[in-house]
Image (tube, rainbow, N blue to C red; front, side, top):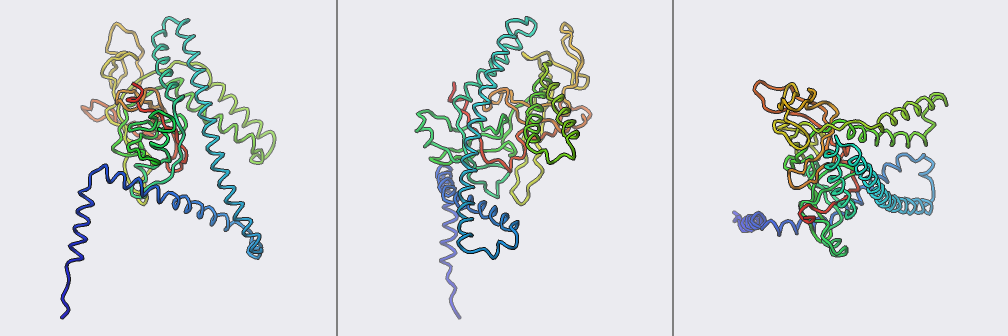
Amino acid sequence: MRRVSYWPYCFLLLFYFCIFSAPKQATEKFRSVAICSFSPLWHGLHALKSKIASMTTLPLAAENASSHLQQRLENLEQENTLLQSQLSQVREWLLSDDRVQEQYERLEKLHSAAHTDPYWKEFFKRRCRELSQRLELHVQSIAASVVFREPSSWSSALWIDVGEKQNKALGKRIVGINSPVLFGTSIIGVVEYVGFQRSRVRLITDEKLVPSVRAVRGRENNRFLLEHVNTVLFALERREDLFASRDQAHAVFSLLSQLSTRLGAECEDLYLAKGEIFGSSSPLWRSRSPVLKGLGFNYDFADEEGPARDLRTGESYDAKIKKEPISLLRLGDVLVTTGLDGVFPAGYRVAAVSKVQMLKEGASSYEIEAIATAGNLDEISRVVILPSLQEMD
C-alpha cells in the first residue's frame, strides 16, 4: 500500500497562514502590484469584447476579404481606440475647465447678491464660502482613468491610474487618503489606498462609506435638471433623423428650450433634513440595483440654514421665527454633502431622493432611498481627484 505524504498539505496550510497573517500595508502593496500587472489585460479584454461586437455587425462579404485588408482594419481599430481614449482625456480636461469657470461665475453672482440683498446676506455669504472652497479644490484637482475593477467588489471599489508618482511630479500631494473623487459634478467615492502608480477608490455604493448629506430643494434641483436638459438639447440638434417631420422637431426643441428657460430662473434654495446615506456591497455576479439607503433624516436641531422643524408637519419649533410649514423630504430633492463627516467638502451633489419611507410609530427620523446623481457607476471610465481636506488645512 502506497504511503500518503502530508507534507504538501502542511506546506499549503503554512502558506495560507502566512498570507492571512501578513500586515495590511504589505497586502495593499501586493494588490497594487497585481493591479498594475492585470490592468493591461483588463483593457485588452474590453478591446477584444468591442472587436467581437464589431465583427458580428460586419456584413458577410467581409469574411471573404483578404488578410491584408483585415490587418488594415485591425490597425485602424487600434488607432481608433487610442484616439477615443485621448479624446476622452481632452474632453475631461475641457469639462473640468468649464466647471471651474461655472463655479467662478456663480461665485461672482453670489458676491453681488450678498451686497445688495440684506435679507439673504448671511445665506449668500455661506454659499460664497462653500463655492470658494470648491473652486480652490477644483483648481488643484487632477483627472484619472479607471484601470481595473475587481469582480468580487464591483460595486464597492475601483482602481485608477494615479498615485504617488503624480504627486511627486506635481510637487504636491493631491492623491491621498480620503481624497474625494468626482464624476462630473457629483461625489462618487473617496481614495482609500495610494500606491506608486495605482490607487483604490471606495465608492458611495459601498456599505462602509457613509457620507453626511442634507436635502436641498430649489435652485440646486433646477441646476441639476438643467444640465440634463441642455445635454439632451445638444444631442438632439445633431440627430434630426429621429423626428418624423420638421414640425415635430421644432415642437420638441421649443418645449425643451422653454423648460431650460424655466429651470434657469432664480428661485429660493431650502436646506432641509440631514442624515446619512450608504450603499450595499455586492460582487459583479450579484449586482443589485444602484439604490442608496438613507437613515437618520430629520431637522431636530437649528443650524445656520434655519430653525429646527417638526418631523411630521415641518413647522418651526421657534415661535419667534415665522416660517411656513414645509415637508422635510420630497421626491426629487437633491442630497448634497454637509462637510460634517470631515471627509467630503460641503455642497457637492451625491444623490437624489427616489423614495421616502412612511414614518413608523415613535420614529425620530425618516428612512429614504436615493439614486446617485452621477448615474450608472458601472460605466464610469474617467474621474476627477480632489485634494483631501486634511491636506488643505
